[in-house]
Amino acid sequence: MRHYENDPRAFRTRFFSTCSKCSKKIPQDSMAYYFPATRKLLCQSCGGAVYNAFLSSATNEEYYSRQYNYR
Ligand SMILES: [Zn+2]
Figure 1 (cartoon, rainbow, N blue to C red):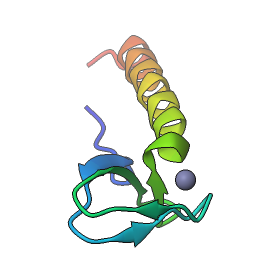
Figure 2: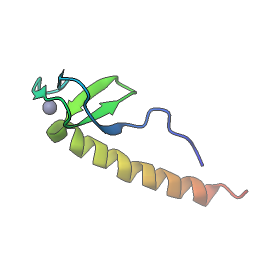
Figure 3: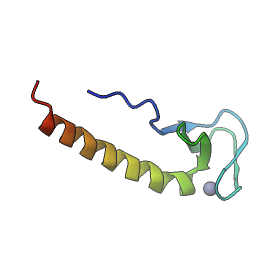
């Protein structure tokens, strides 16, 4: 299976941060999303939708690569 080095990650913030999109403050120990491809840290409301979209596209990609990989 392909490894996604640029997988966005959902995690709990250890530090007080700021959302790269809406500039909202992200308090310490709250959910946030990190996107290595763009090096952006997004708050839950900005990152959640993007993260979920990524999850479904990753699943599709895995499905298709399985279809076309006959090994
Ligand atoms: Zn935000």
